[in-house]
Image (cartoon, rainbow, N blue to C red; front, side, top):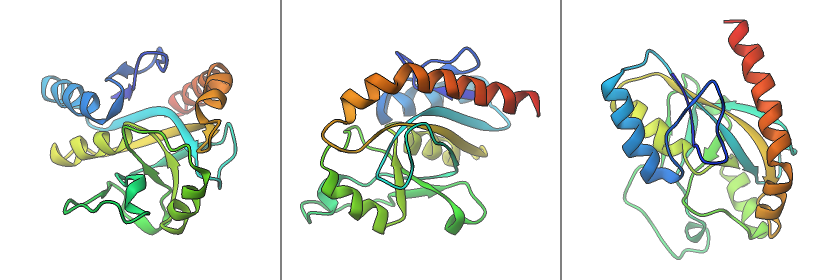
Length: 177
């Protein structure tokens, strides 16, 4: 089963499940309970903390839920905030998820130091649902912006081209399966 966020981020080969972690968790759980998949694949866009360039396509099976305030010592969590469906997590690109987009470029170094390279609002929820329902899962992401003050503007200016590139990439991958 291939899923995506929805709204302006939809693909003809994927089922939209909602934007942000809460909508994703609710809608994806419902979808998987009604029609349990053998494998769950999330396809979407991501912001880069600096190691990946615009339009890079990255695959991952590991996500984190780390808020910016963690790095300024303004918050803590008793929850496990990294989830993975990978056999070898050390080789994974970690995708961070939050309901907020990082716009302070000084925080990128903190994420990179923790081996977290990209930001996507939904992926952590996707992997948590998959883990709970014991469904193998992963994600494919295309970088649309850097996590800086121009994040939203850059996202909007690159969005159309990114969606086209991701569609081509995924359709080629699906043909080879």
